[in-house]
Length: 500
Image (cartoon, rainbow, N blue to C red; front, side, top):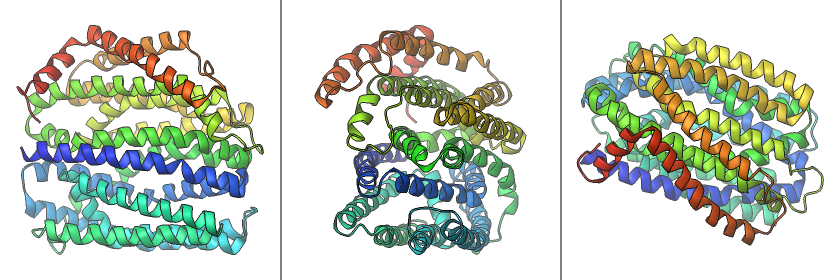
């Protein structure tokens, strides 16, 4: 019952957080485009991606700790949990020192070596202000965040993030409208972010009074941190390399075009990820304590996760282009309407989401070391093909490289998770993917991505409501025919016969 309550709270808080985030996230890029132009927007987007890469410094330790805590918290072994987090705390402090040194180097190089239209001193301080919250997180709060997520208290993190996004985005918009000061914009976010970190720190200290960070550190429990880092690096390459390669091989205006499309897709994917994280902590714990129940629920999770993401991205394929055209209207220093870029974004996200459920199995089982070669080859394929394709096809080539890497990673991940860990046929996953791909293809034969190009927002809304009904119904019908067992289990859960 306690887990059921936490799942509900996580879900509600995730929905509220994502609605707030999506609503606010589209305001600032538009104001940046209007006030500073596409090149400055491209520069700021590139800096943002660089800082995402810097989070790799803690990624290995963070995910390794998460994997180690699922079993220990599931069994309420608080002494062992303290030992793991004690080791994590030591690594985070070391990471913070390295992080500070790297940030100073990046600030100097990016501000005073790479040519941009932004004032060099302004750019230097923007980078420093961007880095400060993460620095404090390493030393003070990061280990508590991991504990709260594994314990199913993501709703606390979501509520804190919602408050931060509301306050910081309103503050940024006011500053941008009144002063056009990039430094002041970033300062507002920095101060509010530090306030949020303080709140989460004191919440965790009060909630987990049993936690002893001075306990003898269990370094063995997070010994796979380097292997985890490889997996995380692969994920970072997938999510964040494209805009950096485009800015280097094309120009910052092309990077701005990519960044605008990526805003829409990344916000949707973040929404999906946050909703799913509302209950995956329960699946992670269940994997270790009740495998029979886990297998049935995982079939439901995989089926409806893949189906839901196909529905969402199919609707984006049909209706997103006119929305982007409206969003970028009046911005004439770059061409933001790109049919093939949109289609490639959709295909990339569909391919990525097919493997997410089976990839979570690797996290639950903590088999990072045995699968790190998969991540290495994905990175090699991604970067190699992306560079070659960008030189040949421009901005679209970046996504071609990512799709090529995803084809490889999907094949090996689906095989390993199903055969080596779950002990079932990999055709279960392929059958779900095939059913949804058939529906996606059918919809694309009816509507292409530019079917509603250059139409009014009202017409987009009306057509979206009408056509989404039969598209969703078609997806559900085909998936029911392909996988009746998942629907049967879901009906049992809905009817109160099963509980997480």
